[in-house]
Every structure is written in structure tokens, then in C-alpha cells.
Image (cartoon, rainbow, N blue to C red; front, side, top):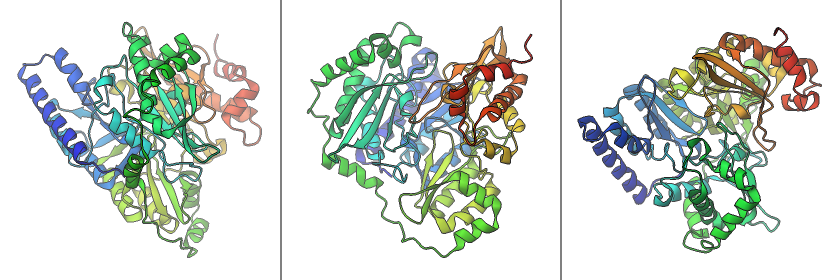
Length: 552
């Protein structure tokens, strides 16, 4: 994984000192809250319902074991013993004291981490898929380009005050697991027929109040132009993006308003001034960054028969392997997903300090000391030898991280919602818990197969409910919490936005609503047909009829 150079170290250290001074001036009253607001947001500090929330960047979802131990230390010393992994490969702490925030940033800096640009109208954390570098269907490792984008965008003065926040995702696998089309800019890295690294660029995606899938604006772009082309996009957005209306300020509104073709033309015209300029990447720079992502420590595969024997003798282990273990591009290795969704008592994405420390230990014992955070809020150990899987699984069972539900209904995504967030209209976590209780039969869930459920507490869509096969959105009705349901969302190569099925529901109705949607799916599916295929074949009416069958 990437290691800070002297410039990174200096930048982050000086940023901590700067923020320490700003916090001191706020506490003394020298700075008003209005003056302090943009300063704290630039360092990832939000004011939530009960306390400050700190969002820490995990660039493209990659952590070292030392970094994860530091996150555990922060959870234990400065929070209430846990952290929350988000859908954008960050971690959030919900109970932060303002006077301690600079100390937290100093602790982060000691292990090459920070909270810079995790909020504000700037380029946010660069994301990619959790299996980057080890996926069997990967064409190229996108992490070196993600890191180059991170370095270029961090405290870039030209893009520090954009019309609105800006999110970039990269993917380079046959199956898009980075949700490229739901981002402001999505970049797909591949090789053309000549074997050259090239880029397919999408722009104008985003969820929230007006969900829109991004449009392709460029193909076959030589990879050397990644920075200059993204810069051209940002310049066009900075110039024409709405600043008079926050609800219409995202790039998706601009692209929709003028059309993808016209937007692409504007970008090409701007890019003509940047092409082949100082931002053009070189093989030397790519190699400099890429060296940090090469892993040369893989051992030759050993097949001593133990893995097959463990599978045969322990059905629970076999079930976990089938659901939570992926193949690896290196023979004899596997990528393991540790589920953060063990049951109704644990909010999706929450991991305790003790669990973080255990994961860090496993990463060193069974891998190369590296951990990944997934868009789905789970934790991945990317390099585990097959013969070590059984020992790892037994540890994970004890730690509550071995639920074999990856991709199933209970592997749900949920934002913190109204329990913490001051923007939320309704609570997400009790709804997730109630649904978990209703669907606690793992055999039944496995029979259903892959089925995504996403829950957001408000229209900002931090739970990405539009992209779930089943989506739940918390809405306010005369001061009461209600929930709107969508079906048909999907991410990946066949990305789609869910459609509202009808009037919203009270909280206590939600388990029954989900149950009836699942019931309809089970009744109409053919063989092992996925939910999306069944919905596409029969339409929404059978689902609506069953869900609302008790309505007057």
C-alpha cells in the first residue's frame, strides 16, 4: 500500500497544527460558529444531533494493520468504543469532543491518515472496489491511478470551493463493484485492442434528491490524460454549476440540463487547453506510485488436502466459504469478507475497537498486514492462503464477524439515520434491526440468493437506497417517521435506479412490507432467477398488489 513521502508527511502535520489553532480560537470565542463551520468541515468534523462526528478518509478503502489499530485506539479513547464504516470507504466516529479533535488528527497523522476533504464542497475520498489488485476478473489494478488522483486533488486550491461536493470512483474489473455510474465522475480503466491502458469516462451521476446515473462522455482516453481530463470536467462544472440553489448544485443537474453530448463538448474544449500540459502523467510517475501496490510475498500454492477436509467436515465453514470467500488472482490464495452485519443488535457497518484490533492481528497472521473496506460496509482480508481459511474462520466466529450473509438480504446497507444525523428525517437502524429479526433464517435467505436492501434516513441517500434491489427511504409526515419503498435498483454493469411502489409506510409496517415483497419474488421467480430479472419479467404490479392488499 502507498507510503507517505516527505511532502505528504509535511502537509498532514501542518494541517493538524493549523486545525489545532482554529479549534483553540473557536473554544476561546475568537471564532464564531459561522466562521468555524467551513474550517471544521474541511477537516471532516460535523455537528450532529448529540455531538461532533468525525469522518476519517480511507483512500480507496485500503488500510494497514497499524492504521486499523490506531482507528481502534481512537474509538476506545475518544468515542464510545466503536467506529462506523461508510458506503464511501470512510470511517465515522459519532461522539467526538471538539477540544479533542486535534489530538485525534495528530494520532491519525502518526500512521499516515487524515480527515482532509471528507466534507465540504471539494473532491471527496477517491474510491474503488474492495478487491482491487486481487480480483480474478480484474483487467488492471486501479489503485495506482486512484492514489495519483488523491494526491492531485488533496488541497488543490482551484477545486476547494466547488458548487457542491464531488465524488470520483474508479473500476477495472469485468464486473463493476465500485458503483461507477452513481458518482459525479466514474472512470473505467481497461486495455484497448492494442494492449494500451485507456479510460472510459462517465460524468453526471449522483443520488440524493434527484437520482441520476452518469453518462459516458469519453472513451479510449489514454491513461496519461487522467488528471488533465478530470481537471477539464471540474473546470466546466466550476464554471457552470449552480451556486444559487444547493439542491441543484451537483454536476448531475448541469449534465442533465444541457445534455451529456453538450457537456462532453464543453469538456473537450476545456481539455484542449490542458492536453499534454504539466498534468500529463508519465510512465515514470505511474511506476513510482505503482511500486507501493506490488505484492511480492506470495508463497507457492500448497495443497495438503486440509482445506477440502475442513469443508467436508464442517457445514458451517463450508457455507461461509461459499458465501464470504472469493477467488484470488494468485493460486492458493483467497479474499475474505468479514461481515459487519451479524444480527439485529449491531448496526450495519459498526465495528468495535476490540474487533478492529483482532482484524489487524488476523491481517498480519494470515496475510500481508492489509485490510480493505467495502462499499457495502464490510471488511476484507485480501490475501489469505486457502489452508489458513479454517483457522481464520474460527477466530471470526468468536469475534462475531463470520456471518455467512454476503450479498443476502441481511447484508443490508444502512446510514446512521435519525439516531445520530441531524439531517435525517427518520431512523434507519431500528428498521434494519426489525427486518433482520423477521429474516433470521439463513437457509431461507440462501435460497433467495443475492438480494440487496439499502436504507437511507433522508433524501441525501447516504444509504444509497436508490441502488438497492429493495430501497427504503425515511420521510417526514407531519413530524412522524414514515418510510418510502423502491424496487428495481441495482449497481454494477447493469446499474439501475429503483422506482417508488406507492404510498409510504409506518415504521412498524416495514418488516411486513419487505416480507411481502420477498413473498412475491419467491412466488414468481423461475428456478434461481435473480430479483431484478423476476421484476423485469413480471413488472411492479404484482409487488404493489401484494404489499398494499390490506389497503382500503
